Length: 97
Image (cartoon, rainbow, N blue to C red; front, side):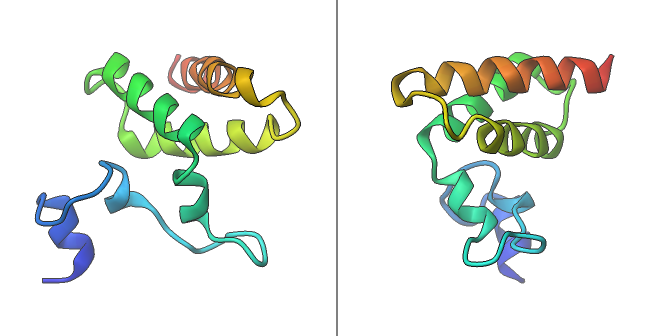
């Protein structure tokens, strides 16, 4: 069984988004997984995932939160987690109707 399959089945410890992360398309010198290590991203993904309760796939949440984090890169540090969550929430709502 590959690592991805093991993670999907809960065979390995780690964040719930491990099974849908990919390094493809990452900017030079960075990997996509580095964005997932950001506490603002982790907190926003956890809260939005809990709010969606199965209505929105985790993959859509991730594909919304990570770009929101990058868009807010110059925002003040203490406000960042809340700003990331708010922006991602609005983008998820807009995408899902």
